[in-house]
Length: 261
Ligand SMILES: Nc1ncnc2c1ncn2[C@@H]1O[C@H](COP(=O)(O)OP(=O)(O)OP(=O)(O)O)[C@@H](O)[C@H]1O
Ligand SMILES: [Mg+2]
Image (cartoon, rainbow, N blue to C red; front, top):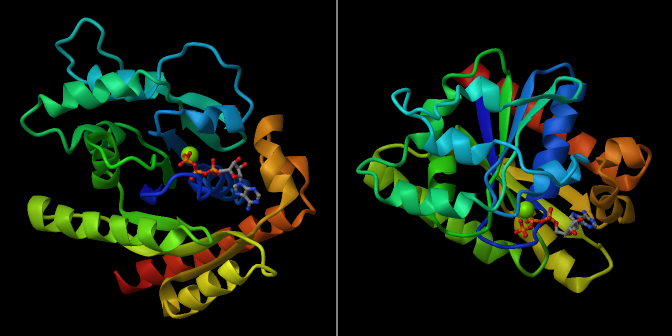
């Protein structure tokens, strides 16, 4: 299983939209995909149209991981199967704030998620929606990931990407391992805006780490409120086409990564 985090230290840059569309795209390509949501807002489930009701998920996965505990839950018991064909989800909810506190009391909190994901078999990809906050839970998510995709929106992308890159460097120095940045993805791009031009220039300067552009698109803005991805809501929209092209580029890049390994 390849674990891909979608992360940036910036709010509202399209992380959840990207994570959900990437996961759905990969599932539509016949891959077995697990989507996990570690952002306290728990929006990935909402995006996929799941009813807003209490259910076990990341909280149980990260805290009740000791088989000696009465409430121990196997990772496989916490997975919602086939929220779309080929796509499973471990949902999240605001109780993740308690996880932050509990993990901070542990002597070695970092492998908390990696260890639990290792219990799950049969997936080609795990896609992780990481929240914008610099906290222990997001560090635990990054520690469990092999690769990171960093969304960058006009006007706010640079600092979010820079902050994240710095955090990964610190993680490598401190913990001896960190996921590799696969690249940056321009999001919410309106080519008529000057500020978008600056982002596009910046992306071009990144060479192979330029993962392309997702344009600002009404179908993408609307689809989450319909509980659908753009592939379902408006499959012919520019948003759906952009995420399809991104997914294809990412798969091509990953084949290259395997070839070099
Ligand atoms: N390409 C796009 N075109 C139009 N609207 C978009 C696009 N991408 C995302 N949005 C909308 O912008 C808002 C922020 O997107 P999203 O929730 O994916 O960002 P985020 O980085 O996950 O935010 P947060 O930091 O709060 O978790 C949402 O309302 C979403 O529907
Ligand atoms: Mg989000």
